[in-house]
Length: 123
Image (tube, rainbow, N blue to C red):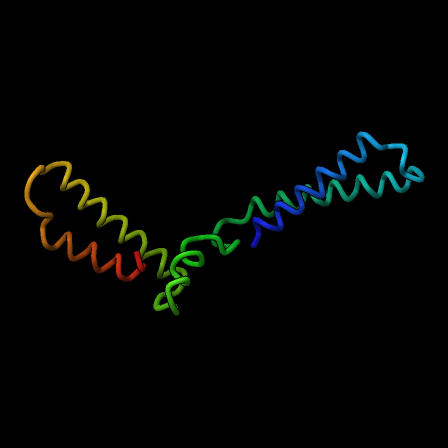
């Protein structure tokens, strides 16, 4: 959602800056030029605000893009991120175990935790 808005604003800003730089004489008077420069400042401020929003505020995090795509939520947004962190923790433990032990299965408790948290976050 924000990515489309951002692209549109960037395009409008580039067009306006190009017009101000290369077609300066097409404006009627100094007041119109000042108005257009004000638009440029406005576009830049909005783009800066969009950049400051985090991915969760923009609804572009995994909760909105992945988790909700696979059904109604069982976890809130905050619960999802906490569960994702636990899932990553246990997956890292499993990978570390594999790095340290070339043969044999992952210990049952690690595998169970991985499966539990993966199911929670729909991984």
